[in-house]
Every structure is written in C-alpha cells, then in structure tokens.
Amino acid sequence: EDKVVQSPLSLVVHEGDTVTLNCSYEVTNFRSLLWYKQEKKAPTFLFMLTSSGIEKKSGRLSSILDKKELFSILNITATQTGDSAIYLCAVDSYNTDKLIFGTGTRLQVFP
Amino acid sequence: NAGVTQTPKFQVLKTGQSMTLQCAQDMNHEYMSWYRQDPGMGLRLIHYSVGAGITDQGEVPNGYNVSRSTTEDFPLRLLSAAPSQTSVYFCASRGTADYLETQYFGPGTRLLVL
Image 1: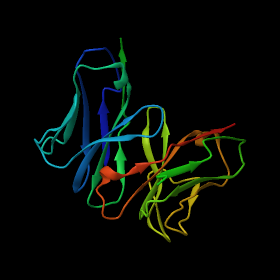
Image 2: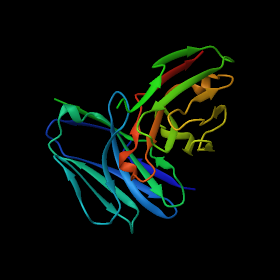
Image 3: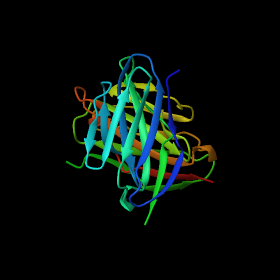
C-alpha cells in the first residue's frame, strides 16, 4: 500500500533558526514528490521533485529528493514568523491519478 | 478566472441529514478530486474524477457519493451525515496534460456534524 510519512509532526523554533522537514515514502512506480505549504486555508504549491540529487530552491526554502533511500527533505533557513504553517508532502505514481499525502509537519516560528 | 470555488464555506448538520458540497472550476480541467482534512491525518482522498462521466473512489469513500455530469462541476454528497464526517473538505482540479504542480485547491468547506 502506498504511504507517505512526515516527521516531525510538530516543530517549534525561534525566528532565524534553520529547520529541516522530512518526508519518506513507499509508492509503486514513483513519478513525483510534491511539497505544499498550508496556512489557514488551502494548500499552496512549493516544489515538485522528480529526480534524485537535484535541489529545488525558492528564496529561503529548498528541497531535495533521494529516490534510492525514498525520502525528501525541505529546508527553511533564517525562519520568519510568516513561515508558520503546516507543510505537506505528497507523492504521485504512474499507476494512478491520485496524490497520496502525508500527515504534515506543523511548524511554529516565534519571534 | 475564478479558479476552484467551493460552497458553502461552513455548514452545521445534524446526524442523519443529507447535503451536497459544491465544487466548480472554470479552467476546463479534466481531473477533479475531493479530500478531507482532519487534525493529524493530512489530506485524504475521498473520490476523484478523470473526466465528465467518470468517477472513482479514493482512500475514504464510505458515506460519500459523487457525480461528474459536466467538466466544470464535481459535487460531493453526504447521504446521511455522521459526526465522524466532521472535517474540512477541499476540492482540487488539474488539467489533463499538466504536471501535478498545477493542481489547484479550492478554499475549503468546514463541516460540523452534531
């Protein structure tokens, strides 16, 4: 059965800290892994990763995929209070049209 | 474009009542799906559709029905609401040829079943 596991479930840091969020997966015929940020409402897209070892970067956020060890990390450097959100990881396979989501990591950044 | 719209934003039901959550998109997307989000559970797929007239079950389909008579609309029906269906419901859509990075989510419907 396809599954996505995120850790930690919750994280509390101070502004300026660097955080690493983890996502491990088991899926048949993996196609892509996606990261979303969810604040009060709907998830918003951050990154899509399909190849191992190629870092995707957007400002202070970056992500990388390891298809051999079946995991991805999302790094946030110099965190700000606006980074407080739930970060969701999802995987997609060639077998299905479905996105399988992890439970998310709740990040709280305090001043 | 309005994107993906959902109505209502918030609803309170009594156990046993029925209702329909509306979802519409104006992007001519083929794929549409419904998720529910509960604390500590992430997003779980309820039903999805790959085109008008075609629907399929996701991870948690029990207690819900869907239909897709048009490309634009994908309503979710609760036939007899139960407290376990208290959740936030998100509708999403994407185009046939798009990568999943362009899956668009609606703003969500918060449902409380008493």
